[in-house]
Image 1 (cartoon, each protein chain N blue to C red):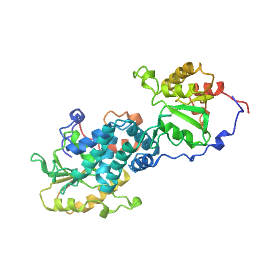
Image 2 (image 1 turned 90 degrees about the vertical axis):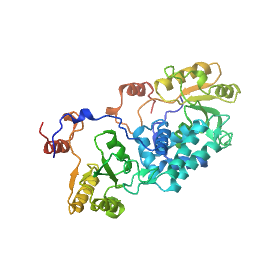
Image 3 (image 1 turned 180 degrees about the horizontal axis):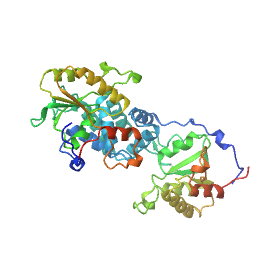
Length: 215
Length: 215
């Protein structure tokens, strides 16, 4: 099998002189801009699209165009919607005394799936993050304060993620909202349903103990 | 904090009566069709696009449309290309005596990055997989046999993945190609560069021993 090359590895370089053709390279670059999609995934998706039937790739392109053209932000809760106000804000059966504050529009879907909550929402479009340079001005807070000061709201449920940023945002909102005579709550921290105690981190277990309820 | 509900979990259902608006649902559905993108990723990508600037989302849509309209399969090696034959097949400096057989077009990129191979390629667009109902007729094999029987080729390098399907494909091709007077090789199996022996599976270690070379 030829001369054995023990140091072959050192000749391997990470960027060859091979390049994709311009249109393919452009598709890969556009896909790479999506958070969570790296070079490898962008390549795989690109070649999946290039290999798939023309109709199906064009259907995706059209779906992106339609979604951008037909949707806007709800003027009340800031979610992405086709109709303003959105279906939840204009829903006659929703409890307008409750506002659940979430980070992103898709968080609403996760909460709605549980069928346990019947109030309204407010989407912040992010969290406070001094490290990333995201301060209160970068979040959609004004609308929330306006809605609360209008007087109908009795409870604001802070449902930002239990991360450093999500907790900071919840703390910040608690401080500001304290001046209104409303109940301010934070979603419970504890063990996820079905979790094995052995595999849950100790911070979560500690919070589960702190937040224990009587049976 | 209200009445403690120990059996709350049992009321949680996986599909609520909340639905995305039609255009958003369609975008999520189209994205979900891409292999490796599940519901959660499709949601995240959709909302990223919905929140991003209109120009940047439309740039992605246009990139998909352009890629579909400007690319085709290379009539020689079957890769996806803008010009037929592709840059590699028509490259004057390539060694036309060698053909490297790969599964997918993007595998070419991985090999080209190493700058070690200067021959031609042949893309199968898949692997044999009896379980998935993929037989020889589903792969682009005829072109390969035509190229080999034309007489210029001296070596066919089988670079399908070392998976059950990739190995089956390599075995199948070896059997068929044996009738031509050419060298048939398979890329080496062994430890990946930088691997810790402790963390490499025993099948790989066994193959690394079998394929050992003199230093």
